[in-house]
Image (cartoon, rainbow over all chains, first blue to last red; front, side):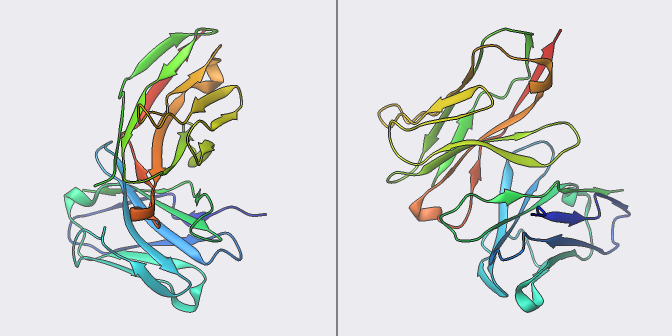
Length: 113
Length: 113
């Protein structure tokens, strides 16, 4: 069984540009989550999809971040325009139900210059 | 709100030393507790979990016991190896945060030969 896949593994962009991160969950997992770790601090929740619907987006920091999951399969997280404080590692996770452990991807390291 | 506190380190140990990483939590009710590990260059992996009081999670020689009375979930290993060098995250998921995992800040462990 393939795990959670994230692309790219590393992205370096300049302040003001746009970046789109992609996450492919484990096949059959309806629940998809985005988290991020900035400045070596705690890993913090961003949002949760159930299939294509946003179940909880309370962790999204501001309206520069847009997450989508069209068709309920893969998800994208777009940052537009990127700011310096957005640098960090963005993790995606998936689970079959909310009761089961979440399986994480390797993360995307985002560097804003 | 729900939160997790853990010793931040970094922790440096010699091979075959005993490891303890302290973790305490604040949550309503009876949360599920987890330890995740991130090896260098890799993603987050679930190391072990416990879902109710007095449960002991174990994996790869690591153990942690769910202590409701002290709200703790300390990670222990009797004899560490160089390959255990990684960042360890204590985490919880509770009824009030059922869809998100709440992480501690992570503890960096280096094991030297």
